[in-house]
Image (tube, rainbow, N blue to C red):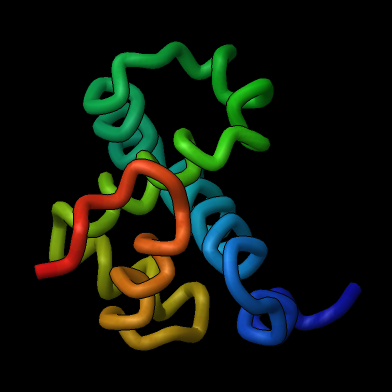
Length: 101
């Protein structure tokens, strides 16, 4: 299996943003407290996750959740091999992002 960080950073545009969101979700799911906080914040049931993984709006929601917590943002960025600022830039590539300004 290849290097997941390299696979993420080699992608461009929306594909890279979607891959980052999935990386962030994987990070959230590694810890029961993070998982619980995410599911509570989004109001979805864990069983509802799989069908939503291909929904760009939901993927944006994952990154929105990450961007609300500085410590979580830094941890996810580190896990993805990116600078924290890059996470915010990639979020804007997915639907539902607030305009920059």
